[in-house]
Length: 540
Image (cartoon, rainbow, N blue to C red):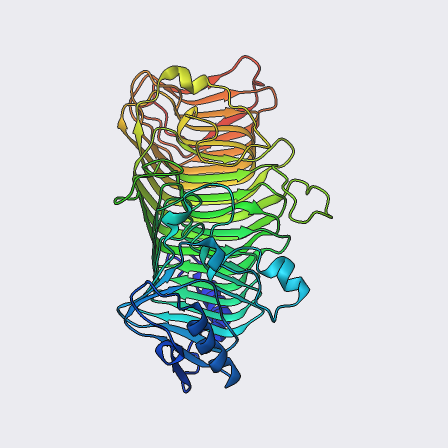
């Protein structure tokens, strides 16, 4: 799960095995009591409402202390079905459970729910719903089809295919999910959630996310295929409770928006998250409703409503054909998730490791890592990164001023085409770049990397595309304590490094090969003379 190149892999592997063992132990729900929905009056064909019959089968299993509700091959039409503890829905091969095209068939809380549940737990309509349950599952090789094209509007109630809240030990396995009226699936306040082997296609209406995990803990998402118009696999915290202890592995994701995302909602934040061995590409069988046809970001990490993003690792991800491969944002939208709470302050964003990422055919925009004045993104490490961009940037864009936009919705395209075709980084501390290769399909005259108000930074072994007449490969403005080493720029008349800002201090060029460089450093007029030094570099 963690890259083999990581020295921390054994420790994290032991941690995750220990963490997830209880989930796997509970992932084989009891099946000794089986109820076939046909025995409760369900009729196939997709014309007769089967809600009552399916619910009766669920209730019978619950009355026996648990069991399996069997949905055999055929097409079954239903409104909201409420799961019960220790009950499995088994959708057999050839089964399609269709969601009703009439919103009236999607209820609020069941009659047995208390006032609190009526007000909060069932705030969203769904085909399959449940609250405060234990040991539940949706399994099999069948299909959940929400017929969401009946809800092609932006405002008003639209049903999800699955909505589970405040549940323990949940298994979602192997089913196909299609055509929700909104998000495909939403898991909220759940503890011990395993989602594996599912296949999602969601491209029929607005807000068609693929998989949403909201304020949950102890989550494993593995071997899934998610293709969605809106965001793909998304962690959210629509509360002050964080998403924590989450592992996403061996998944294939495509999205017209963001493939792998933490945010936008971030009230509680995201802690102890690993993403490993995933493939991201632009959707190939759909036209966009939101986002861009080629997709927005491959990996998007965002904290904009308070909360803490901390201890996040993204390793061994292959990305192709999206607009921006990597996007990180600490902002201040400051959304409240409770009416009785004041607006949250700026959150924190720290301790992130991005490793072994390959991206091809990405747009000319460039990647960005941006905090806010006085609120830095901290301790972000990127290593073994190879990114291929469209390129084609002009020299004038290299000096483009980028607005702060603290309250804006965070999106990888929010700043437009950046002054750097590779990375634009601002208001950060403790950045580390190791073994970075940046390529462009067309010549690009912008900087490869731009850093503004950054301190305690390292760049080790940068290999960046550079053409004659381009801006300096790296531009540093108002930076402190910067080490650049192991670089070997190509032979051009361009400077390798441009320094700006009267607060720039302690920039060290060490053990670089400048044998072919016509000019190593260009100093702005306000840069102190002692702002940088060279140590053990190979000179022209």
